[in-house]
Length: 157
Image (cartoon, rainbow, N blue to C red; front, side, top):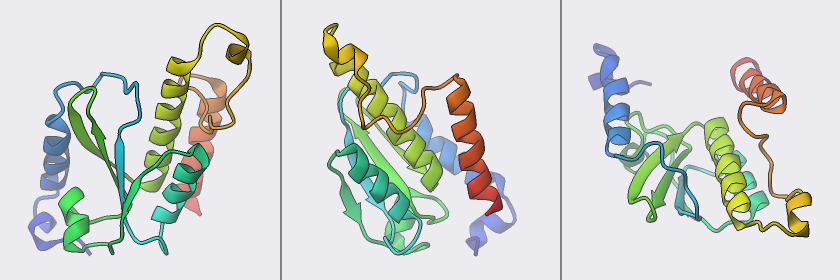
């Protein structure tokens, strides 16, 4: 159910979400080291997908157990939807929220690739793919297939 304040003006949803991301003055800066991650949601629901991804990439995170539309959920998402991932990147002095389980997993795959590539040197490890790279690189045929399948699953099944 959509909260009453958004029923007559659906653009408030978009503007509120945009204002939370507008707090980042450095939208285009790449995350180069692991940020502090806090996942909001009930593990008996869709946030389980994100916990699975976080466990696969092997990075620590904090979990806040909350139901959709609860006060805790509304603190990070204007409609109180879960999952929501709070990302606190001290290197770039930014804090932002990623919502929707597929978007969160794609984001996690992208930052894992970025951080792994920053750690690599020009020795033998350059030729060995990391087992933790679970999302194909952007602007590739594989990424197009990944996005197509992910969005199909999310919207059709």
